[in-house]
Picture 1 (cartoon, helix red, strand yellow):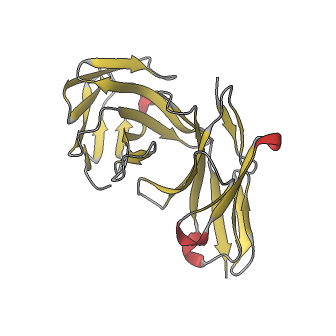
Picture 2 (cartoon, helix red, strand yellow):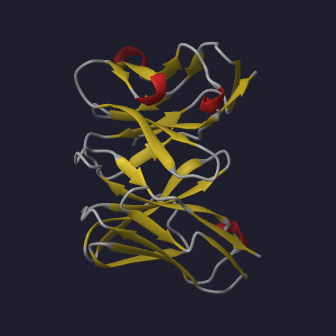
Length: 114
Length: 113
């Protein structure tokens, strides 16, 4: 998890409330990703960013928005949380210490929507 | 479009036995292939990757995988399982510096004493 910090690590919220998850990197990588992990589905891409203010949708983007105003921060927002968004959310950067084409993951944020 | 299938959502082996986790992929271009491991309540850690060149790649903790283009496979093996190998393993494909990395559903490995 070197260089990637996700916050909060755990959150319980109620249906209909807004939630923002933060991903912070210290590696100055261009690409950042948000995935959700659910049993039987592996990791599914929600949104990704290829630069400041440059973002695009993944396969499960409905109900989510993202923002990237600085290279180091990538925010994931659930405007109105639903129980189906209960999941573990992982942020990733593309690259490692050698600059290789790999994903390096944060420790995850566990979200429970009641 | 890319996709990844992993045969067997749960695999159990005895300590010291061979570990074989299966991964098949589809990709319209030469793929980059990856195996990641996830220990309980942790993020994903890269085990090994195939980009180009040698089709047998070695990773951390004694794992290796072989890229077989004709079979569109990238199976993960380890000659002798340790208790510490118990974790979930994910295979992933990237279309050669494309935007997305597509993951398989994962295989949970249990190691029995």
